Image 1 (spheres, helix red, strand yellow):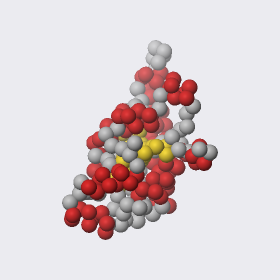
Image 2: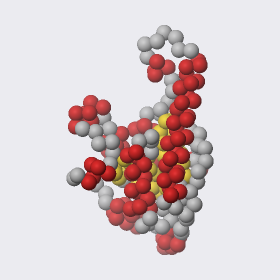
Image 3: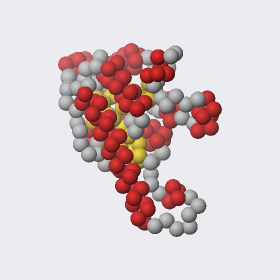
Image 4: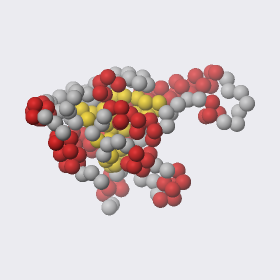
Length: 205
């Protein structure tokens, strides 16, 4: 398991002297807040070469927003120049959602797509608001598909240095039957993964 200090040290060790100066001198305090469509933000998410890239996976849960806030306070704030990408995985809308029905009217599919798009905009907007409140610059990206696989592929494509996730605090039985996005990514993501516990769970440990 990588500690925060180990992640930062690992990243800085790979930089040249000039790149390290850029990291130390670079500071930004403006958050981006705009509508995001699937696939948007890819160019911005690529980030500037040499800067540490922190990707935070967010959804509609309070746990994910807490993880984002924690990462901004405990990682990004202490590492000037780090780039932050707010990443949201949107489920693909297809006929599998209507399994068992002989016919699915196109209007039903369109309605579900609109609902998904609205949920995505809300989740991303809330996450960017957190970044703005913390005076942290951030970009947003949306990927479509199974959350585990889509996020795993996205952090690889973005060449992320750290992936931050919120923990839902599933019990052992639920985890065994339902699995866990955080468990999957902890084992399969190409970069170190930081899983932030919910406030109440962390306080009682």
